[in-house]
Picture 1 (spheres, rainbow, N blue to C red):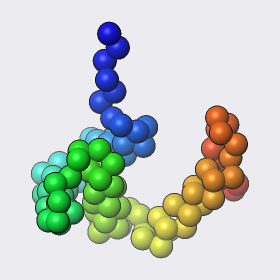
Picture 2 (tube, one colour; picture 1 turned 90 degrees about the horizontal axis):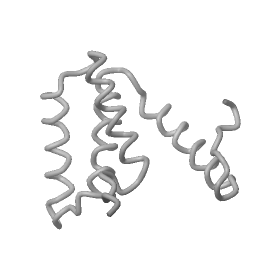
Picture 3 (cartoon, rainbow, N blue to C red; picture 1 turned 90 degrees about the vertical axis):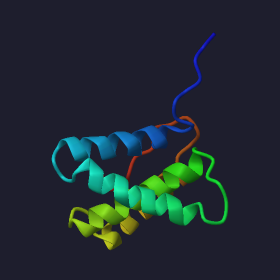
Length: 104
């Protein structure tokens, strides 16, 4: 029997791995990350219980983006421009083809 994947979607694994890498590279302490992530989860879970999948990792990404802005690693405006570029790229990419940014 094939084991179920740990992550529901590839981007969940990627944002998790990026966060771990940034921590291991010394950009922030894990305790500081966990405190911020816990606050985001609490805020998101006020109205309902989170399912541990898409909503959990949306909160994870929100926390990471906010934390990186706070420590000066990623300005919110730059993150927004990059997010929009990736969205345009994946929406215009044929199914199964690799997604590439136009300016990359």
